[in-house]
Length: 566
Image 1 (cartoon, rainbow, N blue to C red):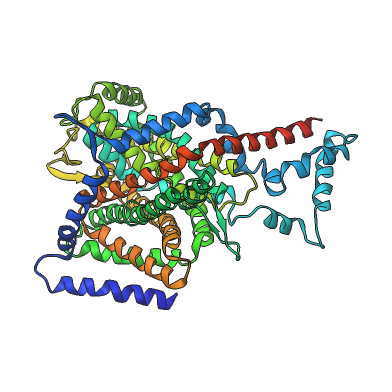
Image 2: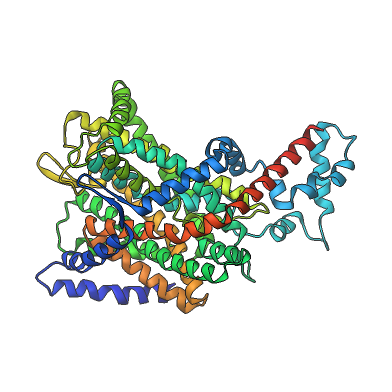
């Protein structure tokens, strides 16, 4: 670990030394160098199918939303029908059948042995069946690990994936959406989140179904594998290889952008604001500190990441939600007004520069997709590491992510900002780039949310700074895993390849902290949305497999329920 950190520091520290020798600050030089790159990728990824005076419709958004709507209808609204099944799966209600298989525990032979048992005795009977499954003296827990491949539990996989989605898109992204599109953007974020639950279910089921397990038990999964292996099984071997390779490249870019630079960027904004730090190298210095912190954590791989995120994510999400709830209910009389304004502005937007309903819809959809990443396929990389015999079980668990991320947390942030702005502090639409002016001072992203919190909670700037940094770090460590898996897919699973990726990843922590919000978020949007193109190739050719696996899992649950009742 010491050697790894010294290598990283040796590459990043000369940048800071160089900054001291230049008249132009390091932060500005990094931003100037990075802005053209961000602009190039933005123009490539968000190519329009319609371009008018008031708004532009990029093809990738049509693909994303149209696909989510298709999967929602095809699978019979899984976001609603299987919501409680997903919760029960996370709770471990079906853990026995996922470890051993429903047929072994509740099949005809097993149940026949216990037909005369009472309901009280049935659990003891099932324990005896598990004991009978032991081979060569192995204990039951060993059988569990051998019979259901994977590295983490449902809850750990969910926590890791949620930590990759619940980040500064929920704090800064929502503020950006409202600043650009007004309160109505919130409504379309919620709609996109609900539809995205279905897409997330499909891609995470496939992630488990087509994963690779190494000789040491390490799991390798995600779109790279279900695209290549799945399409090969359908007779599209060449297409699968090409699409999987393209996805891996974009996923690496996404890990550098939305999963990294955008997070360090917002963490730096609130830290600089808290300490009133105006140094021309402040961003790079904050980025270096974050890079060292993240570097220590990501060395441990998915198990270390899972052990961190399962503790940090619930805590930080709960604290943030409590703060939002406090502000919202402290202004109880304004809640209905805020909700009414959100709905009204969704269909009759008045924000400066947003144009029409389509304009505000596009703003909401874009920010929601960036926040919950449904359709990008990234979360399936974390979910593929789960221990289970039923791939659809993890798909159902995964559909909870967009609900937690967008429907709950993003909506709460939006209500806080809308309620705050009933005081007329800023004009919706701002300058058209996401910047609004409060008391003559420019604010953007997390800075807007921080200003809203400060209105109602004393010393909230300290609390929100801690929250933003925790969101940023948890998102970065999860995305480092996503990017590394893609890197391994392209360049092999050697230690040297791992080290190269991690150094590049940590370098982007510094770049994100130093560059401006505009260029960083443009690049991040482009990288996240670019992943959608190759991912959808896999989803549209393999969704019948998901249907089959869903029915298999639901049948297993039914078999258990029938056995217990009998």
